[in-house]
Length: 282
Image (cartoon, rainbow, N blue to C red; front, side, top):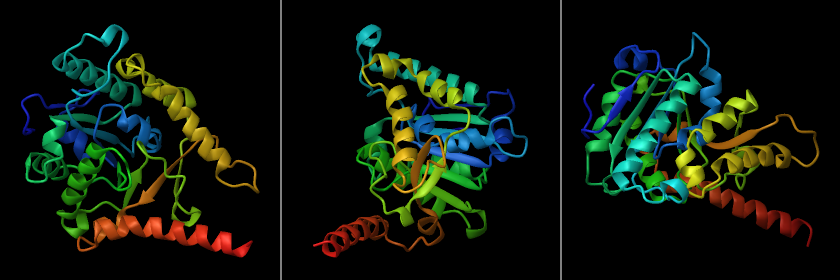
C-alpha cells in the first residue's frame, strides 16, 4: 500500500502482506502519537491477542518529532527521535500481537491544518481494505490539539464509508483528559484487567518517553486502578482496571450530527447533575 508520506511505515508483525493483515482486522485504533494506542486502546489489544477470530491493528498518524527528551535522548534531533519512536511502536506491535501497525508519518502541523487532505486520503486507503467492527479514537473532549485534529480526520473518514461498512462500535478514549467526569450513564466502561504484566510492558516499551521525563508507565496503571476503585462508592470493585470512553457510534452513523453539539451535551448533562445534587441537599 502507498501512503502520502515517504517515511510512512506499514507492517504486519507476522510477516503477512499488509492488505491481508488489514482485511482480517476486527479492532482498529487510530491515534495521534506513538504510545497513544497502548494507553487508550489496551481494551482492544487484550481482546485480540492470541485470538484467531479477532485481530487488532494500530494506526499512528504523526511522525513523533515533537516529543520531550532528556537523559540519554536529550541531544537527539527530531529526525533521530522519529526513528526511535517508530522502532518503539513496532516493538509494541510485536509484543501485543497486532495484525498490523501503520505509522503514517505526518507532521503534526499538517494534521492540524483542516485544508490538508493527505491524512484523510491515507485513512480512506486503510478503510478501503479494513472493515473493523470496533474502532478506538481520541475523544472530542481531549485537551491535546493534535489528538482533536486526528479525531476529526478519523471521524470524517469513517463517515465517508458506505453505511453498511461503518463499524458497529466506535469508542472515544481518554489520554490527555480523563473521562471520569462523565456521568455514569454516559460512561463506556472498558475493562482492562486482563494480563496486567502485558499492559505494563506495552507502555514501558516507549523508553524514549519515560526517559524523557514522562512516567506514562506509572500514570497509565494508576489511572486505570483509580477508575476501577472510584467508579462507585457503594459496591466492591468489579474490575481491577478500567478505562473510560465515550460512545461515538452515533456520530459515525449520522454524518449530519454536529460534533460540537454532541460533545457539549456531555458537559451540559454534568452541569445539570451538579446543580441538581447541590439543590437537593441545600
